Length: 322
Image (cartoon, rainbow, N blue to C red; front, side, top):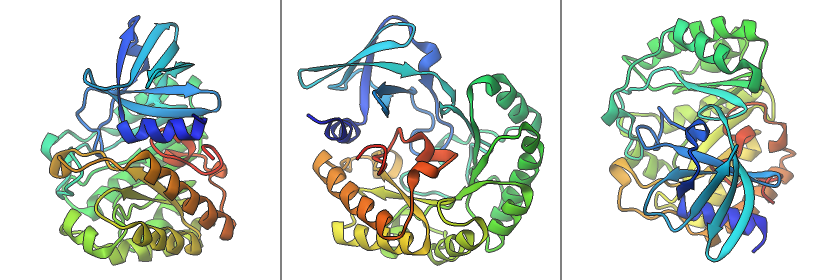
């Protein structure tokens, strides 16, 4: 099995048992998105690839930790040597921080509204970055919505103001207003990610009641004008019920605007529990479509400095995984 095939199969499962020596320092915890409130995850590196797998005692995948990060991944009779990556916050090499771990919206695929976490203070966030400064190359910020989209943006802008003295590239992913890209750019943000989540407006309406699909497209278009190509990203979940053709259309529309899609395999939790993760075969097919679309638009995911595309643990990323 080739390495890109292996990663596709691992992402199709999405979970692993962690055995062997204690490995707490290698476990990452999420405060946002589908993985929020879970039992944690680990990043397993094999060669120049990495994959993030949620921890589960029932998984068919086993990661055996030998100590000091050295580990073997056991899957379908294969033993792959590699190592566990120590996270900064949420992922390796970055302080990827959730500002507000609660949300007034109820997207079906997201566990955050059920958890109702707190908002971090600016002092807490600065301390978090300081505590991992010697092993990160970027700061990434995401957030739920505590009271309103406008109030959340104002608070995140204040957070960014206090993080720019670290002299690290800063990526931000929040639910936007029409003027969000310009204000984030003025504040010193390097890259932005505004998430479509669903490949079609019909799916978005079902998955994200109360949110505006058209506004996100408008903001993504404006973001490329403000930040430039290769600096704007958008999550699209694979497996919400879209066809391959619908997903291909979404990918090509994004890349034609200068946006790099982040194609995230569905994690069946919260309101989508019971749905199936996409198969390895589908993920590989979509990767080929993704790769061609990026090339046709002159986009390069390897230039990403922050957030998910730079990490590449949860997704198949053209240039890194193919």
